[in-house]
Image 1 (cartoon, each protein chain N blue to C red):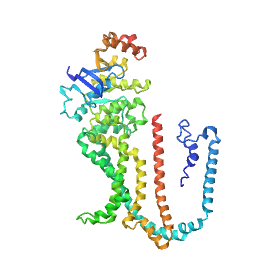
Image 2 (cartoon, rainbow over the protein chains, first blue to last red):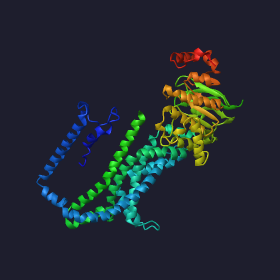
Image 3 (tube, chains in turn yellow, blue):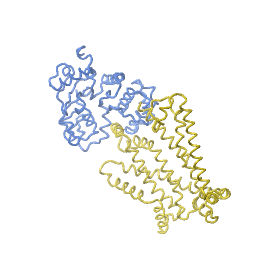
Image 4 (cartoon, one colour):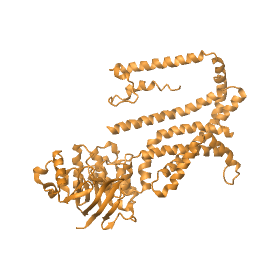
Length: 302
Length: 257
């Protein structure tokens, strides 16, 4: 429902490409053919504004006039509760940031290793390929919360010498293991998307398999998968709330504590806002990257 | 004159399709051999086999008297000595022209970064591409990209250069600049095997022309003989079709060199 994005391409598209009017715009408004001429953009802006105002206006009126609204408003949108809980939640959200930042670094590395292992050619590397495929199958197949439980409760209780016993550590490990499986598949798609002729060119110059991978395939593969990679990272950031179930006092746990003492759900709304505020810029960055790639591809095709 | 490449009884199949059915070919040092023939006759596959990009099914390929098709050979070392240029350029799109050319000398020959780039600049300069060094491949015309691909292969200082229909993907107006570059290499004594549809070029530059038809070399000899007095009926038919398509201007009129 946050998707005011619906009408917005309409607003920007007439300005988007005055230089290349022949380029067909995917999802382009079919009305644009009917509304010819210069006033097309002005009319489109008007239509977009009007439809947006009407749509959200009607939705707001319906919600506010519903019989349960006053009660819901009191328990979910209490301004005083919001002011009270937000700073507390934010101070614990620092832990979430730490968790997902650390996890993201290791996810990038482990996933790349898995993807390269899976992409190795030749019978010698069969065990590595099997290992990588099995890893992906296992960790993509399990709900994240299960992996967090299994590691978070299981590993510390082993009482092994030399391995950390903090839930915080194992929560990060669990997130890394699960998200590496996803990101490895993203990388692998990128590696496979690099045309075989690029490898032929590299190998014909005498570069070894590994050098071709390192200098020719991977740089192109990684570049092309940055948008889906960022998508997975947004997922990881949200899943950092799951570590609350190990008893780690992070933002979600903090919100739960306040909710249980005050019998008010506003802290959850506050936390939801925090998540939205940090993920929206990333989502827009993904959009921009995809748009840039598309422009590049169109330019290359001409 | 010494032999550079000797191919004996080369067979190559892709699945059930036998693409090369017993190729014998000798290329002497400093000679240019042009492979002509219709698309699908096996020219590209032959070149890819010489560069070990395709494993062969039977036969031998020797470079300077050493069989490179035996299992024990160091594939990377062989490729270092044999350059290949592809129809589709295959430049690395994420690197500047300079990096495209300097990459292999640096990583494979172990040259220093500075040395490799200096040599790359020199070569680019020689082929009229000096001002493109910092550009990315997609900024260049097809002809320029193909010349970069040639320069990139030359930067490895190969003993033999294989050219796989290097002008087939180019606009007609861009063909000349690439052919001129190849002519210059031929004049400089580069040993080359060139698969081409440019018959005028083959006639001018080749020491030897080999006509491939359905995976076999049906006829081979000096260009004057092949183009003026083809012996095999298939060669005649092929050349007639080429003339009819207007791809061999000047061949009959000027009457050879």
